[in-house]
Length: 284
Length: 284
Picture 1: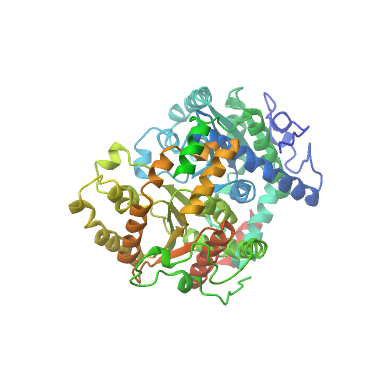
Picture 2 (picture 1 turned 90 degrees about the vertical axis):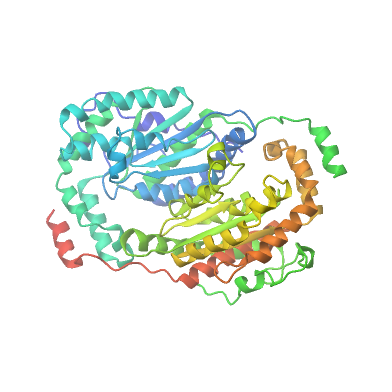
């Protein structure tokens, strides 16, 4: 059942310490694993049953035992980098009952009336679950910083606050897996144009995306800072080359698989006397 | 893309009006569709891509257009009838981003301090989503009635309250699809014993399940009343023969497929000038 991969995606994709610029990492790279689209899709499909089995054990442990751990996959990236695609193609491989998805959009007035982590905390996955953040607490040091939505004196302390928050999650049993979906500016243009060329994709396009694209360099700088300042041993950042969708999907699937394998969840033992219960059922 | 099924699961499974007893419907029956396990699994797999495509359109319409509709699949049934299995095998066929799952367990003190529909209302799927209730508002006329958790004067008016609630949901654009997963007492015994025979299934077993089994006839009577009193044109009940897991999964998949096909969701038109945007992106 459990196929051990000899690869180490956590190490291969972990952001190097003191990264000087994002362009030092090739968004079209394929540093480990499959090297072409066909083998990438096959490798991801191959992980599916094992991912589902690991997830079932984690879920089972919390439902019928004392498992207190969970996993939180954080997806960040520029528009079109593929956050939604990962949810569909990677998380779609496991039982939806064990998933908890949260998308963080522009904050509501109620959310803005609280500290920035207030809405985040409510979405932390409970024991046994795989949580997925489509955007996250990092928006508050990305879009907020790029557009001066609050002054530096407010966003500057947030890096430390995020590190403290993620350390607390980790201490409480949440494995935090952070992925930056790294694309090139050229590929973003291609993908935006593709959305405009296909009426079944119009719904994915927003004119505001082009405005945001105008801040590309500011966003890259803000991402670089977030990656450097918030990649801790407790919750390291991973840079996922995402110019190739098949590679991005495989890489995140493989990373999630590795983390779940390390957790090594187990079906819980019976908390009842099995023979006694067999007798009771038989007599019923 | 859209494969029309010539079958009519909504009619085939709809509870007959004035049903005198549940035993009049064969829980091992296969009234329409596939007649053996192999073709049942194939037929469900065959529905998968089309279910996913319909769901994507519904989701797209709400995300990038003015679609206000949603679907709510209500799953009820005795222990081991397969509510969790349906979530995995049927809802697992679509993009998890478009799903909203809610499991209703024993109410919390906070929930008990409110009207019985308070916790339900919070989980109604928003526009564009497929919601799934694993147990539902009906628990309050099932377990509550069987165990006299509140007096008849409290649970008796709930049938009408549920009908009013579901009428309101329907009026607001929610297609309510209610499925009773109908199993025989013998099959329940087999499934409970199977859970006790397999250490990877211990977590699904709870000694309380045997106690509940002791109230089988009372539950069947309570279900019969709920089916008869709350099967309305706005939100009819369906009785899904569930002694055969493959048939149950296919039947609910086919019913959901039929309802989505009837909704006929469409990709929304662009709410922007496509040519203007192409120019903006190209120049960016």
